[in-house]
Figure 1: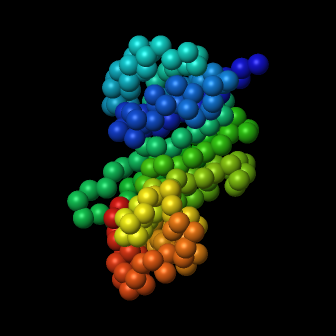
Figure 2: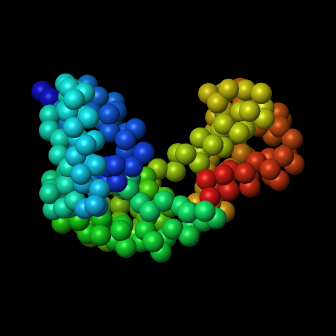
Length: 227
């Protein structure tokens, strides 16, 4: 029997959300057997635009899209949701690293955490996308009293994908050939791409790629590429 998954996406008018929302509506996130109650959340001055996005999704006639709404009121958008996708955040300006955004984004994610604790379902899960996602996740989690730690995740996959792509290009391989490459730490200059156990086509990365490049170019490029 089909289940209706209630999901709220913050920053619904942003570019990331614009690419994400149709895929949720099409069932790519929750599967072909689950209907979706999709909530678009944004700041008050962007709600008219959010309603425009809502109309586009309605025009798409997605079979799994049971309900869709747009609201700037978290009491409405976050009510009883099963999933919270915190996509919205203040974007980086010229010369800013992700670490510089903490002071700007901190208050936003404090309020998101409070709203999740107050309005979301008891079994809700949260994925933080807005940068710096690790820190924003920590801030929101600290403000969402009662929601267990294992319900939270931060999307640092982009850093790992960058590292895999760079290593694959240097080794003359495809991204799918790169295995066991990890990213540790937080964000920007504090993250560490760990090639120690990385393998390319089954061989150690350090056997195929010069270690000087790995240590002096690969690591800083990954650290600063999204800074």
